[in-house]
Amino acid sequence: MVAVMGSSGAGKTTFLNVLARRNTNMEGNILANGRPVDPETYMQNSAYVMQEDLFLGNLTCYEHLFFTGMLRLDQSMTEEQVIAQVESLLKAMGLWDVRNNVIGNVGRGLQRGISGGERKRLAFASEIITDPPVFFADEPTSGLDSAKALNIVMMMKQVASLGRTVLATIHQPSSQIYNEFGYLCLIHKDPPAEDGTRPTEEEAGGHIVYYGPREEAIEYFAGIDDSLACPNHFNPADWWLLALEHTLFKAKDLADRFRASEVYRRMQARPIPTYGQVALSAGAGAANADTDASSTSGNKAPAAAPALSSGKVSKGPMVEDAMDLGPLDAREHIQAPWCKQCCLLQRRSFAASSRDPLLTYARLGQTLVIALIAGLIFLRLSNNQQGVQDRNGAVFFILINQSMSSVFGVLQSFPLEKPVLRRELESGSYRSDTWYLSRSVSEVSFQFIFPILFCSIAYWMMGLRDDFGTFLAFTGIVLLAANTAFSLGYMISALAPSVEIALALGPVTILPLFLFSGFFINTASIPVYFIWL
Image (cartoon, rainbow, N blue to C red; front, side, top):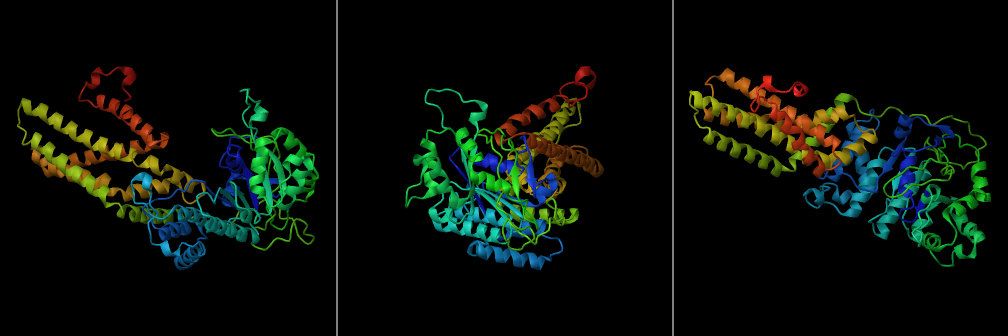
């Protein structure tokens, strides 16, 4: 189990994202068992707990883990076996008492739900449920009290003891938590120069100044300079950050010293892990990925602590009776079949939407009120020349209302769910097409029932053609327009990084289509370079 430590902005998260292949904007190589890895195979054999807790707030803790297990666990398992594993995990993570509580999301206007510590443990449980051979965690103890943080670390240690490789970024852990890790990876970045001098590209990024056994770190830094020697009865995790922040040594110089050290030579001289042991290493520039916060570069990260992917306890790097299993082998394909994904995602969508009835009631009230207002304004239109103009306006209003309400309904909701969707797609939980299909089916009330209700009220109040077949054709056209607008809203939301930008792009995309709809300008008068619209 490896602790990746460093000051804020040193590049810990960037380094972890590169190793977990969440950030592919890099140079260098990522090796498993000493060999290059296939990205798809690598993703199937690893799990990543993000620093941000991303959930569907309307689900309960139990429902979240149940659907995660049904989608990601071995498909030979029955639903009863998945339920038993979920219940066991809830008890192990201390979430049993809140299993039926909704997760909540105050930022989205939902109820508060479970506490921050419980959300962090649920995020950890969401990934550990699949028992991955390689496990990444980005500050899994942030926001937790010391007891709960220790509980998470002990759970990670238990995972590592079963032969899994665990890498976690830890920000100033307590001495008790620090001592639970077997290996320490320390990343350091030079602080800004007092004279405002801009560092070179090589100096700007973070550098690995130590990687090796945790218990040897004190002796190693004491051998460099007395100013880096950890005092007695001082938490080493606090000391490294404090000492490196005020040291006169440059980060690159410390990295060069480490590469010339006996610790580094010993780590590099270890044989390639065998018997399923997983080793990760990043090339010289593997962590030289630019982010808004920082970048990590300059070192070759030594192999991670050895672990068994076969589920047996590792005997250490020197296993005389082991046989080389070659590259990291893909586990059995555990993604649920297409039809099962659709069914499970629809069940999850219905469960989430059933706990948010206010939105449905609001949309229902909006449909009824606007339909009645439109019907009263265009009440019983006459069959003369004036009535023709009024009918054009009435039909155009109905199309605008249904299109705009469909587009903006998506623009205000989907960008908030994109982080959850992106995380689940990266973890291989399901396919994007099954998510879209299930989402469309779960929103059948918004896409079909409400437009039909609107047309049923407005059409007959306006006194349009008194023929049921014509009404069905009219309603069908409105449904096509509304569902096309839904799809357009998803496209805009997928391109926009936030709700604000999505709402700004919506009118820019929709209004030109209205202009060329045939109500404002005759089709024959449209310029040839706009005729495609």
